[in-house]
Length: 541
Image (spheres, rainbow, N blue to C red):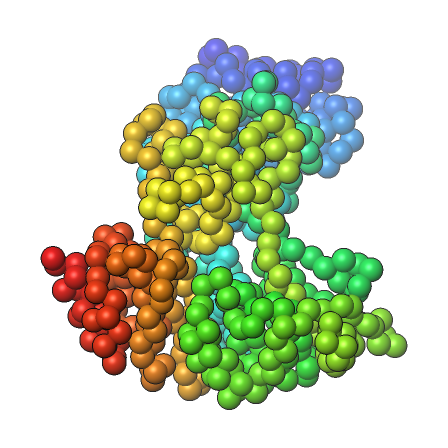
């Protein structure tokens, strides 16, 4: 189609032309005509397809490619753009799609979910030059993917003096690993369609089609499920939804919690896992009265030994925390203003609170995909070592994937940012390169608390491997502490608190190698440094 004809067609579009027909018309333009189509916008202005639609053509300052903004369609206010996909069209490629409500689109790759895994997968597609015009990300959140662990750590730091806790856009992926800050502008520049504030309402595996909450239908060649997990919530009938009862999973949750911290005096934290440990540390940093209630005997019982946990409990108590262990919450009660005022525990004691934070686990957000026919395992989507589900065109990463953990010889899910990042990189390689080396993940967990300005004691621990066998605790938490799990003469797991950089670097090597070791020799070590020397000798045999 010639440039003159393109301009003429635009100027003579009839009032009966459907929006999809206009899109089809633009798709026939040559690169030169497409650019002329953009340039003529100044003269043409708005094209009214009354009563069907109104379109405005403008030039993108960031992409240098024409954008078609859909301001309304069949009486519904819309905002959408023909590019970044049209950018590839202008540079000589043959395909693009329309980002507008109630339109059908074909996309090679679709990622459902907007957390860490989605952000790192997007980076992998970009690194392989497979993003522009080919990738769409659908996220229920209103912001681009970000480093989620920040929400229960630095994001909750007190706002005092010159202290500036992390805020977006400062921690969009992939800054957590020293990479680029992938802001919304980054996605636009890379030609990635980012559909925010959008959920999936339907999935047809046979047609390879997704239906969104905004009425769009997206066809895909390969689908990546990266929906993560949702916070487990306590029932409304026991007060789990009262004002002042907080759960933390996204930026909006964290913003609400920071606001409540500024007005609270007494905080009750339900749960002794990651969220309980990190949020209570933040509350103590705010100078609040903190009570932790959980049924287990100590913090993080699935990982921490009683010896490890005792050191952390002592630190928290020295800062004012009150532990109520061996008890669970029975109900919350509201005060005269309707906000939560107290927690009643199974020990029949009442604990005053003007703020409750609940951290009792999370559930993988996979039900829609399981209902569509994907196989389930460990409450997630069962995948092979290429992270491929029972449907060969659907993959799962991060929290959603139940995958083979080779070093453990079992299939499980891992809810941790390290796995989210690494599984994202692997799945893109698997999709683009085909079958190859399988995903070989080494279990890793960490936490960092009390890192706010003015803290007297920072806490930073890491664990690698498998906590199976007899455990040897070494160190007095002044400042270091270590633990080693030895199973039938094989060192299978290692934990380290406040280690030096070179010591932390050694941990994955230990866990991956699984050296044979004399446990009696290890028990003789009276410092962390001596214990690690004993392990290094065992590794060199």
